[in-house]
Length: 385
Image 1 (cartoon, one colour):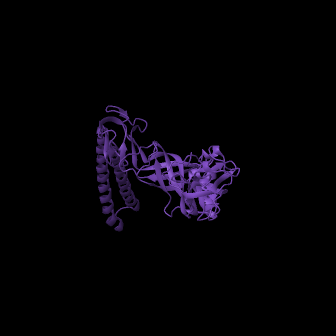
Image 2: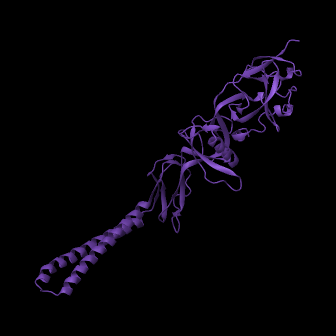
Image 3: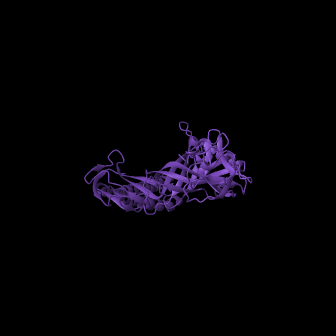
């Protein structure tokens, strides 16, 4: 019988990014609670609920009558203190030539100078009281501390606010950009760092890893984010390390509190290989592929997998450039009979996975072949979950 045709791919080496997919949650980059800082009756709400507000924009108006009266009283106190200062200063000036002519006692001159300084202090106290009164009067008009989207009003007109505590009136959230907080296993982080230190992998970029947001329906958010930092401590209960990314959100399509997945490239493997998932047999004994040699025979070869990218396994070791790896036609294998390798077409339907036949070697298992992503290795473990 002529040799059976099997689909193969030719091994090529190159730099391949290791993609990791981790669960996370979005949160607003800035959150401000709008509170009443003085007591009074709320008179007006000056914004539309759910709208965008600017920093400094007026949001609420509290009855300012008591604070206007207090400010007027403080202004009068300043005027009175300045009048006393004028009188004390004039008397001190009159006493200067008299003390030189010894027409008055030294004690009288000292008393005049002390009265002048006390009047100056009274003026400073009165001006500070006036400033306090003006500040409280300004608090009667409550403004937005930051720019962002404001939620519903938590109180209505006519309510007494700020009596004994700073009553919360509304919440403003800045949603452009958003923060994406996600976690990664500490064991995976340590393994990644060891591989980087050993030179097996290199960092994805000097400006920080790019992060893609994967929504609940599996679609990918259009704008990429950037990794800001990773936490310095490990959560003692979960063994996870928290990472944070910044995601632009100019249109408001993403909402704070939304559960998403973060897809990021933390490292790149040099001289690595990508293979279709159906070409790899995964089992507890290890990962293997079938390599078609020059004699046309398919021989199992153990390999090391470092993750996945775009539905393909990233092979770090075990293969050489130019070798042919079987992807299709496993059911055509007959013992050690030679096969005829033909280029594999990704669009062609495969009749069976790598374990459908009985390729030589203990690692070839039909059950493991039907589940190529059941036990990913390295940093890909989170990506395949």
